[in-house]
Amino acid sequence: MIRKEAARICALALGGTLALYGAPALRGRTAIAADAPGATVVTLGHAVIPLNEPWKFHIGDDPHWADADFDDTGWETVDLTPSPGAHDNDVGLSGYVAGWNARGHRGYSGYAWYRMRVSFAAPPDFAFAMTGPPYVDSAYQAFFNGRLLGGSGRFNGMTPKVYGGQPRLFALPAGVREGVIAIRVWAGPGRVAGAPDAGGIHIAPAVGEAAAVKDRYLLQWRQTFLGYVVDVIPGILLVLAALMAALLVLFDRSDRAYRWMMTALLLTAAIRFNQAIMFWMQIEDSEGYVLIRHVLLTPLCFGAWTMAWSTWFRIARPRWIAPAAVVLTLAHIASELLAGSWRATTVPSAMTTALHEVSAGLRLGFLALLLLIAVLGFSRERARSALALIAMALVATGLFATELGNLHVKGIWFPYGVGVSRTEYSYVALVPVLFVLLLGRLWDLARASASRRLATNA
Image 1 (cartoon, rainbow, N blue to C red):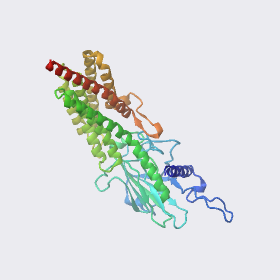
Image 2: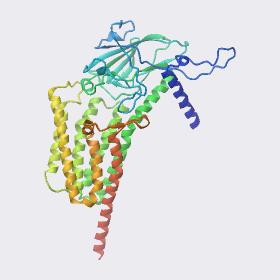
Image 3: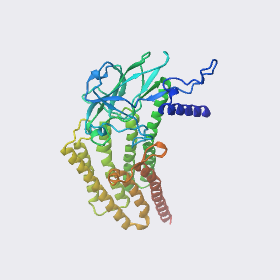
Image 4: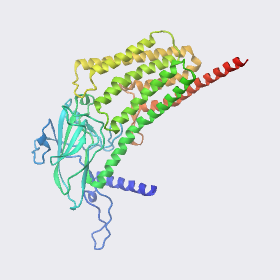
């Protein structure tokens, strides 16, 4: 069974590679071994052709632009052919190209359309299908000859609801061998303002024989799954560390450090899990994602980790550390909420920019508090603080990912084609360090309990 599955994957890879590089024998038909009478027909695989070019492109929105007979000769031409080995800079999706920000429409937000006329040469019983573009800023609808095939996002409101980009598979109408593929795209102002290459389609759709296209669709899902499972794995490890901290609460209810450590670990894990939920499922739109992560969870993480390390080192003075952490947390939540980045209709303004600067300043305030705690903790118990300081540094690597990026510290690597961020590496490394720290505290509690029993018996 394993050998059959491996052979199937190799065959798919061979067929996909030949199709991608334009092998003539596989462009829309099967390969024939020879034309001689009685020759054996050898089927190597059905074609899947990426629709890289030529696309017609126009900003704006008009429902008639989906029609097959619409004249788009005056539109600009767009080539979505990727460079060899190109991939996005987040999860490693292959075939990535720059969006309209880098194609003469910098800063444009709203609707835009892509159109391509296609003609298929195939036997009458040949069933065709199409994959949707797996990476689009930010929502889209796909049409064939004016008929809606499907898309990503909900288009039933004033502005579309945007969900995490996921692979899509569309069956093309049976018996149709010529038509126009039209893709209606919408990108909000918050997205196009955030990256110089944002806007529109980043990975072209593909068409071909239905079964082969389905295999390509499944491979795209595999890439998407692997791209975000690297968030889930640290999340699971952080939950396990939180359970270890909860165990210490049972042994010593008077020490608040274990409760704060558990809280901080669970909040950090929630951020990792939320990342996967957003991009694997259609239950959380982009507004909810930003509201949960950036407005709530991130500020709460900063506050919880500050309190966790303060109580871990048993720092009693200065007494204003805890109130300062509370004020910074609430101010951070308020600034992110008022900035409105969680609303898809937000228009960048001087007030929004100022509030983001306030948030950046508050994060630096947390950094100053953590540095103060590190200095005080080291001076308090030098012999035992080295491992805790390493754990603090690993936590800070995740918390201050934005600041490290601004300092041009490399933030992501692509082992085996899967994007793994600096934050994910740091949290995976954090868990064994915390385990040793918590195990040491558990050992101290066990020794203290044994000493008390001996003193009582004496």
